[in-house]
Image 1 (cartoon, one colour):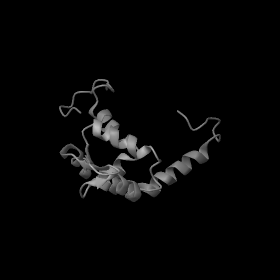
Image 2 (cartoon, helix red, strand yellow; image 1 turned 90 degrees about the horizontal axis):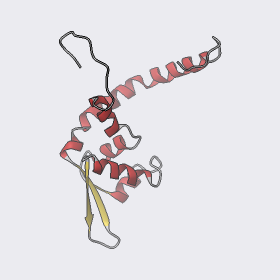
Image 3 (tube, rainbow, N blue to C red; image 1 turned 180 degrees about the vertical axis):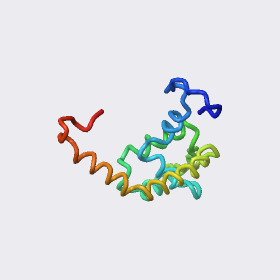
Length: 134
């Protein structure tokens, strides 16, 4: 963002820092995983039970792999039968705790506002001869 008063140039998705940030966290399960790991390491099974009913069978595994790829979590396999796998937030992953907490506060404060706005918008469909699209 410019702070010198000059107009912005067109935004490029490939270099936009917002796009990168959203790509890193914009997954249904990533904020839940970060929340689950906020207070320390968790074994895969414990984390799965903790957020049971929310994450589909392969969703947690895919989410954790993506987070590991992005440098947000580290995976440690403990030699046991069956192997025990533990995940920990990296220092980079921990930097997301505060922004996600702020987003959570916003969501709690404005949940009803968003639902009401959606309801009003959806109720307008077809009244002016147009659909809800742009």
